[in-house]
Length: 240
Image (cartoon, rainbow, N blue to C red; front, side):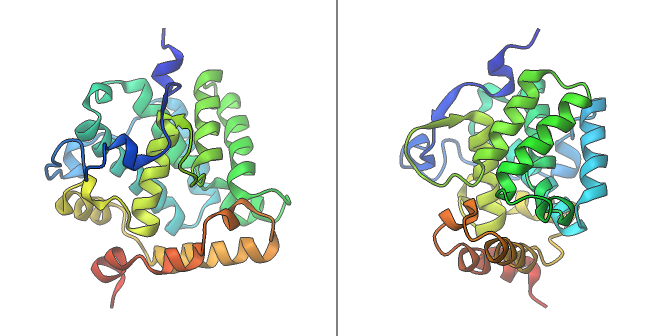
């Protein structure tokens, strides 16, 4: 029977630089072709979550949700190899990725005054429990979604929360690119193209802050410009 730790319920430093001991990486990253080397979890609850996400999200966000999964799967395997063979952990991470932006969908954005990441955690947890996920798994996903924009560096966070935060920073801001080989990133974007993700996400952040000037997105300093300044991905994958 899985333990809470299998669902990522163990503390790691919230400060990613601290976790990396001030280095660019813990282990030198090797190139990976994720299309052949990384298997997306395929238990029924994951397939249900994937269909739910696909039915609610635009293609740009659906692809982003998959990119962060593949980034995370490679980072876990190469930087935290002690967790690489934990199928429960990887499944929980996949569910977190699929649902972390679920409340950016218009259906949810306009149905509440709550911040999208907070409301999305409730939507995801309810969906997963109804789909038969164990409570620890649904709770771990919700916790990760709640904290994936929690950019303060103090304290601790769950392992799932750390990885989803780290990989969204990779995809949205071009941060922590040293944790993967460039060829790995190429293979992820080839499998799930960006489709102009930078401008798409920047528009969402602008919209949410305009609608809900109290929202959690305002906690990220100059958030819109951070997203628009994602030079690595813009130049490499989004330039005409």
